[in-house]
Image 1 (cartoon, helix red, strand yellow):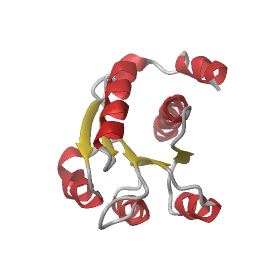
Image 2 (cartoon, rainbow, N blue to C red):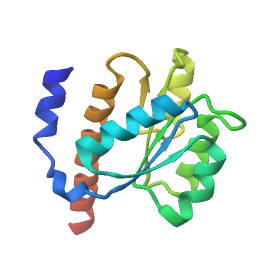
Image 3 (cartoon, rainbow, N blue to C red):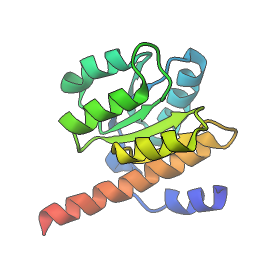
Image 4 (spheres, rainbow, N blue to C red):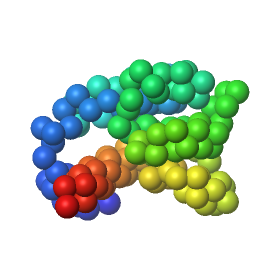
Length: 149
């Protein structure tokens, strides 16, 4: 996976994403910090952290993230519900679900609800997430080109 990620890293122009608004919705403060730190180092995103789905949804209109990295298992409101709301109101937002859930049906349901990708938390999850974010950049570029044509 590292070879593929390194190849993908050279494709998009990183300076274009500097300051890109990104939400990290994760109720584990240590994991949230780790994601934020590493993504800021890699991409220089403007990251907003939320420990609940409710807080994420309350800030969507004002902060308008381009990408949401979303835990599935959250207190009070699960990631599936958050995802459904986001994709209904803001279909242009890329949602990447990153979770400990190992249920295959959950992954299928999440993808059907409009997630860009579904990743399981693991030792390689950060590298996988970075690779998926590069895929998001490629998709953003394709969408921009389609609008120009």
